[in-house]
Amino acid sequence: MRISARTDYAVRAAVELASAGGGPVKGEALATAQAIPPKFLENILGDLRHARVVRSQRGAEGGYWLARPAEEISVADVMRAVEGPLATVRGEPPEDVRYAGAAEPLQQVWIAVRKNLRDVVEHVTLADLAAGRLPDAIAALARDPEAWTTR
Image 1 (cartoon, rainbow, N blue to C red):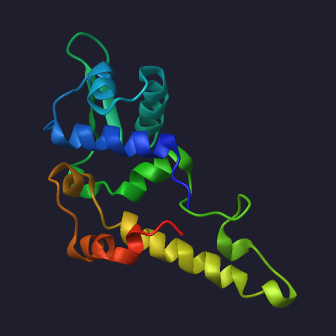
Image 2: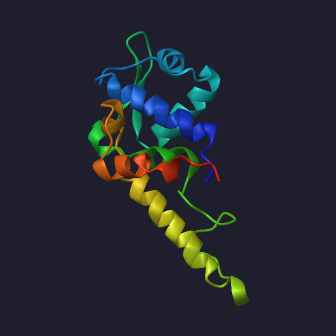
């Protein structure tokens, strides 16, 4: 699976907002805190605002803040806001892709991949990340030495 810079930056910016305690944070401050190119971040924040993950206000007292409590926003919510569905095959949901012959079971592989991805990113919230803790099941997966191999 490939996690784009856009997704990585979006999650990092959202976690920064979660750790800010609810008040408005300037886009420049988010960009600086997470070393994200400011113009790129502006576009990402627009997507997050459109998806109602963040809210914003212009002006001297303005900035960005989470639209809901950090405990209610999963990593999956942020990913979907900036990239769309979590797993597609050639732009289609895996359940809509059909294979013939020996490749027929491949559809089930893609569906299983999506399920496992959901099992992680739908269960980690921005509050978890801002607090520096992960749900036990996710932390256990990350501790598995096999998770750290690059093959």
